Image 1: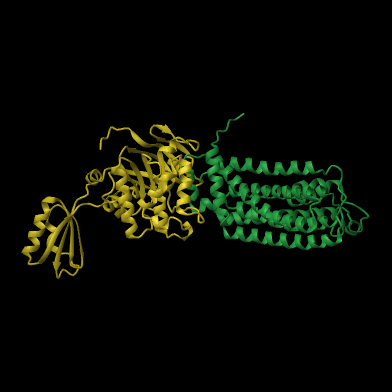
Image 2: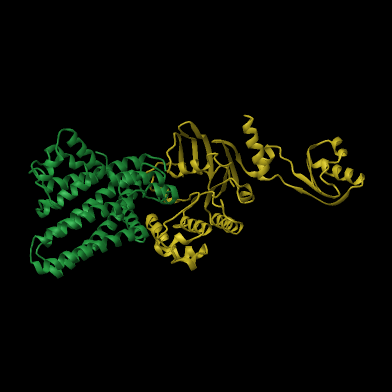
Length: 312
Length: 286
């Protein structure tokens, strides 16, 4: 990922105020070409509002949105030709079939209607092509949402909570679809509040909390800057959730936690071996040990909690 | 003068989608079915009566009965179609998808008006068309031009209520709020009539004298009718047929209450809410 490539989506001081509530505040964010960009934050952090402003559905109170360097407004019809959007909790028209639905959106995008059937096949809805959308399950409606987003092969995709509320099977399908679109060269910006969905999928993440951007970087860089350490997980027979007191005098240990037979130690790489040796010397029955890299969850906890303290 | 860019293809796409989606809505089809059955029943009995009495005046009776059906059912169909067309799509989320496409908000609005208007035109023609054919077969076609004018005025009434309810649907983002506004639109003419009568009686007017025909409505009351779509429609139809007596009430229209005045005012009633809807919808957050 070259960092000097020009951003395809850029927000400058983007702000949105609803009466008393400051939903989004001076948000500066850049999404570069070809990235899968995860836009993360707890519920109510301002993710949907930000994405709606990017799409021109909501008007910013202050600040601007640029798509491929061009400023976005409600009338930016040609800007939206390169853009596709999957809103949170998408819905269509109950009495239309998925085929009619896609035909309608093909017309709006100026795309050939012949793409509708292959798209339905691609998302696995081909056998329900002629049923009314009103009879569809939530997951199927979401897949239809993904299908409509692919009309005309746009270079930029914006998905709002694409996996929200779906069961594991659909989550996997949507993840794979996002990856496939990215492999074809598309830039994807998507929001999520469930970090396990995002882990391993994004090139870059931005974390928003209470309307403010609190972090924006690659996951590896974020872990490094936040001094997040890998954790050592040791399975010991007969531990019974007790933290061995002998670990307290080893240097470089940040935290020790015991749950059942599992002992989780957050520490420097150098201290790891010492921990194992100490435990072995004490005669503990070590079954297994492994290191776990810092997860997005850890990053998230760290940045959102430091935001609360007013630190960041 | 502000130049508004508009894409006809997008408007047509939205119109077609609205027609296809709503013509299969079971509430709408139920209302249309009731409308068709009532029209056929009325025209069948009136037509067969006419056939043996050979009195031309009977057509007027048919129209007054049909009018009392259409003046309720057509606004009801129009409001059902329009009251939540924007707010309901806001709440469900389908509007977000549509507006993410290369389409302008005014095109969505106009497309909705045309598509839903087509449902009204369709149901009116099916309803009164079949009724008209039955009358023609049973009693001959002596007054068919007036009958066509009647159908036209009914469509006008439907489009008026559609335009008003589309405007109200742009004001909220919740279907439930819109429902309240829809009920208000529907009952407006009825409330208005009561208010008007109260003002008349309160100002020293006599109900008995109206009934016995000793006195007629003052002019200001006729002008006030221009604020009530259902009343405008009824007066327009009666004028078109030259009917001056309804269910025993004598109706002597003042000379300024012409058909063209009533049609013009109703057209204003269609255009103004659409312009207001455009201003609200273009500027609001979705």
